[in-house]
Image 1 (cartoon, rainbow, N blue to C red):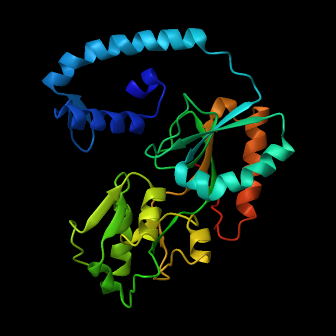
Image 2: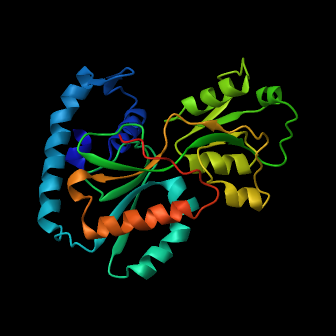
Image 3: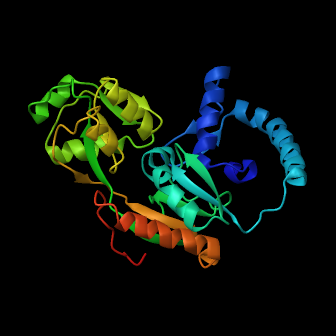
Length: 278
C-alpha cells in the first residue's frame, strides 16, 4: 500500500524506512517473516507523514505531463541493466527510433511493479494475478572471486568471507548445500544490497560473491574475476519478461517482448527457459 501511495517499489519503501529508523535511532515497525506492524512511535509519526506525502502527490500529479504511447519504461535489476541489457539496447533503439526507452533499475524489489513501469525483465519470485509472464532463461548460482584468492577444495571456502545480497541470503545456502559444504560461520560474511556491489567487492578481493546469471562474464574474460568451481546450482526462480495482462498486446510492449526474446536466444551464455504455462 505504501509503495502505491508513494509511487515506488515495496522493497524501496522498506529500505528507506530502515535508513530512517537508523538515523532516528528508533523502531517504527515490528517485523517478522510475514508482516510488519507499526510500533506506538510509528503510529504517532504516521498521520503527519501521510498528510505530507498526500500533498506532494497531489501537486506532482497536477504538474506531470500525460504519458505518450511511445514511452516504454522497463523494470530491470541494476546488475542486469549494467551487465547485459544496456549493451544491447542500442539495437532496439535503432530498430524502433520512435520508442523512448526509460530504465527503472531496482536493487531490492522482486515483484513486477505494475504501477510504475510498462514491462519488466525480472527474476520472478512471485507471479501476480492479472499479469503476463513469458519465460526467458534459467537462473544458476555460481561463486566468483578475485584471481588472488586461491581455492583448491570446496572446504577452502570456509577460510574466506562470503559476500551476500541481504535480500537474497538463501543464495549461498542453496549452493553450499548442493556442494556439500557444511559449518560455514554465519558471522564471516559481508552483506550488500545488490549483486553488482557483491561483484565489485569480489573484484576488490573482499571475499567470494554469488552470481545468478552470466553477469560476470566480461570481468571473467578480463581476468578481474574467476569462477573457482564449475558447479552451477539451479536457483529457485528464473528470469521472465513481465507486463500487465491487459497491456501485453500494446505495440510498444509487443515490440520489446519480441526483441528481448531474440536477444536471449542469441546469447550462448544463457540456457533458455521453456514455457511453464503458469
